[in-house]
Image (cartoon, rainbow, N blue to C red; front, side, top):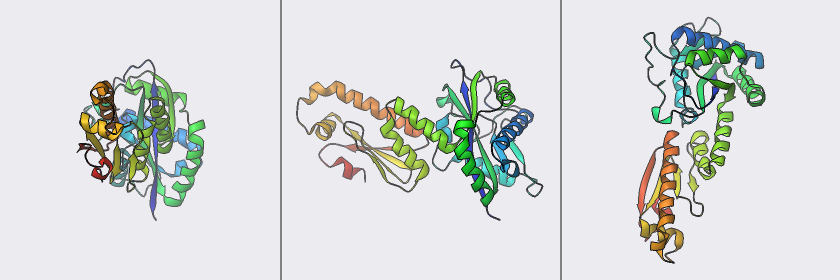
Length: 289
């Protein structure tokens, strides 16, 4: 029988900007937390209890969970396939720190992305395709409005990670993506989200960011090509070569900062960025193809 998966995240909203004291839970605590997560999800949607739950008992920045190919969820799926007990009924599996307290790859979060107010624990539900389809549809409808974790589950996460948690809730990866889209919009990064979303949901699509004074980007095959202009090339592309380009130096410097910001966001989502030098003498759009 064909199997399918539902991808989700256990999201921890931290209080006061304080980072958790522990990156991952040891086996016993990881198992206890996963059991409570499974109980919470089963109380929300009938059918969850008949599926396998696989939880990463380690926390990540949301961007690490929203990467093309869903690598964290894919790793959970691979570990599930190797785990014993496949024909012995629904299983609850958790993966975090080892018995000595070390955190194996790929459950080591990127230290460069630490410090955010939201941390997520990826999970998957695995089972027969028809059951997963029905459960996934119900979870997509309910989680955003009703997906708060039970108090003892939130407390287990708080104690285990040595964190101050304000809210703990369950999200589908689509819910998490929608939250990130809103956050990027509030940060003035809305034009970039279309590329991130395309890389996640339509990996073979070609997507452009070609809006006014924004950096020029093209996404194809999971890679972004970004036009890199020197001052003269920038003036030619964005100003048509008109005006006193020397007096626009401050605007150009702001443009470079915007490029660096865009590149950092894309790389946080695991999307490589290739800079293509454009001198303004040729069509920059053609050079990105």
